[in-house]
Length: 211
Image 1 (tube, rainbow, N blue to C red):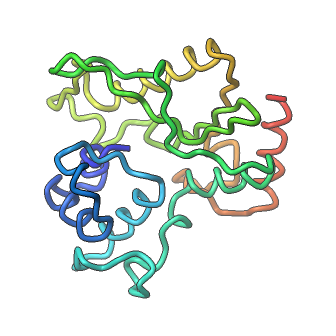
Image 2: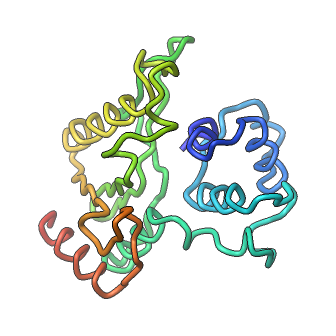
C-alpha cells in the first residue's frame, strides 16, 4: 500500500503521515523523494498511530506506549498471512511484486508494479486478503471528485486492480487464493475475531481446494 492511499484511508494529510513514517521508519538517502510502498507492519503501525490521538511522530511501535504497542496484530491481513505461513510451512514474501503485474500508466507514462499481499514461491501460490473496503463503498476510496491515474475514483481503481490480479496471475503459472473476511470468523463490521482454530480450519479447507 502506498502512503498516499493509507493517508486517505486514515483521514490524515499525506505530509503528516510521511513525517511520522520518516521519524519511525527512516529510509536511506538514496530512497528520499521516492514513493513510500508500505509493508503490512508499517500499515498496521500507522493505523494504531492514527487512532491514538496526540501520539508523537517520534514514537516507535513497540516502545510501550498504548498507541503503538501493537503492530502486526492490528492488521487482519497480516494475521491471515501468519496463519497461512503456519499451514503451508513457508514464510510468505509480503508485498511482493512481479514485472508482469502492473497498474495503469501514470502521468509520466510509467506502469508501476502492483504488490500482492503474500507470495509463496515454493507453493507457486499468491494469497490476497480482501478487507471490507474491497467489496463495499468507503468514504476515502469512493470520492467521485478524486480521480486516480486510471481516470476513476479510488474505489473503482481498487476493484479494477483486484480483477487484474485475478486474471493475470494464473497466466504466469501461479495459483491465486483470495481470502475474504466472510470466509473466516468475523464480526458484523467484517473485522476478524482472531479465533485461530476456526480460522485455521477454514484456511486449511481453502488451501486444500487450491492444491
